Image (cartoon, rainbow, N blue to C red; front, side, top):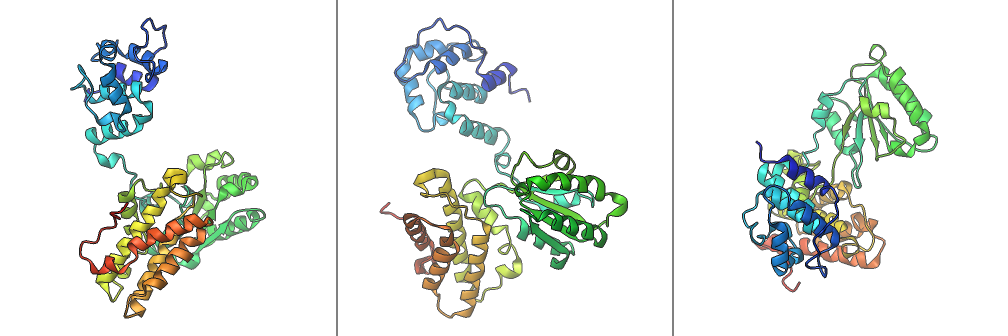
Length: 388
């Protein structure tokens, strides 16, 4: 649409060409020499004339922008009160490069829409539709991701029985077994799932040979599929990456995305499971509390030692077993067995990963906010704790 000038874009990416700076820094106590040099270079860009003079004449006003926790969202001193979005990005780059990422996110949301900031829903059906019997399907793993259950469920949706999905976790000595499984499956038309390929670096050459020479159209059943899971690894064969269909299930960003993902994954997304509790009012409220708790414990990992003393990889399997236990207990007991649910969820399912005593106490305290009778009985229950 012609809204991005090439000179602005290039400066935003590079910071301009470093030349000798003839202007003295007007505020060395807070403005670094690197930032001041970029300001001087940016002053030559269209729409940024007067940047040098503005900082020289209003250092306190610009210091307020520099000190603000969200400098990309505040109004800049004159003459940049009505600056365009891209000029604002250039100014943020000069003053607070640590805030460039949220500034770019705001820019994308305003110009293109929030959907371009959120990863698309994990869709196995689309990837499967693009594949053939000779095309490997590769899951690039991220911490906490476990696509096997989703794969087994998808297999049943397209008519593949669980007995026709053979899975093996690669490691020392598992290569020959995996090769035998592939040779059998290409004749029978079943699926083979090779998990954790990054742990079998020495066998990757043999896998590459199998993909190039054994899995060929004239010898392979049309229903056969080879599924691979691996963390990013330099040992993974490039030819398989180039010829395969690559997928990744990125961890959700933010509580909202985490909640949406929890409700869209198995078993919660299954209508029969969703409607399978004889106490629907209690079930839906407790389920929401559990999903919120699941998102909260995952989000705390982002804050380092402020979140957990030790970073734990809570994942969908923790939520899955807790959800199934919740429904089972609600169906089997007339009264809500809150103590039993707290123990199983907080001490066993999630707490089983926790090795630090203070982390365990924090986990159980967080769970008590969502697993309590007020959540069920109060119409507008708030998970916020006023004393905090």
